[in-house]
Image 1 (cartoon, rainbow, N blue to C red):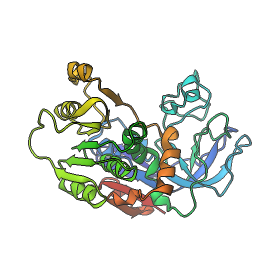
Image 2: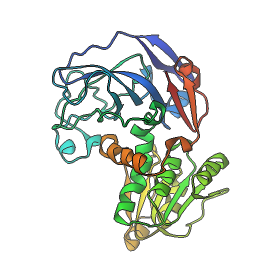
Image 3: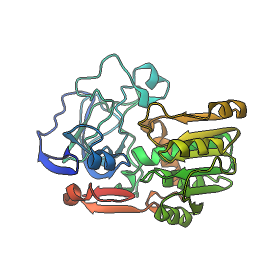
Image 4: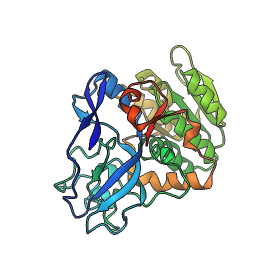
Length: 342
């Protein structure tokens, strides 16, 4: 088979690789139909954030080709969305529903010890654990009918990531106002804003340093404006805030903009282990702060429900769709959201 491989900063290429085999009774072979580029993928391959070589692509929708004998939830021909984190279904985190923290004593032989599967941009891929439930499966239920694979491929990571910053807080506070502040490149902030609008937030204020993302947020109903210059101490406070600045000063601004006993989520990845936070203000105002990886398996059902029952449309976020054979060049090009499709 062929797989798309990062080899060095600024270089991604198709390479031949051995065909995947069903070596695990609970595994499935999946032929990707569409693979989306995660927001982190672009700097990973252009700036070389992690040493290569490694295959790329972990946001995928595809067709089940074959299954092991222990797989009863899926059959050949099913269209599936695959959560990108490998979760065993047995360990305490999985039993508690926090699948992204799956940490069994030992992985099954076919599982990736990194806890995720970054190799979906390939002719075929083996997914290690696709059991029936219980235990929970890392393959989602068959994808809803009538939704394009290019839409489904955006869901497992970045759409889930945006959703989890506003979905659970709005469930606890229906109709609350939401503030999303962004500067980091990519799609996640826009997915958060689109989800907040679809979920009926009282007022969705979206601030971004990028004018094109501001235009996109305005188009799907957010009160969007461009932010220029240094970050102020705070914006007008609201109950639910989302930080996507990737900047210590921006993070502090968003935290300070969170109302008393409000909820702040940071979707930016902070590679600085010593980022300061206004902890005294958080303490005196009773602010809940959350940061984590997106929990794909946990929130995919909620995202699919949002897709089915509201006007939420992932393609309202500017999405560049390129043919499969052009993936090597397209993977390195700027795009708010990139999807390669067969």
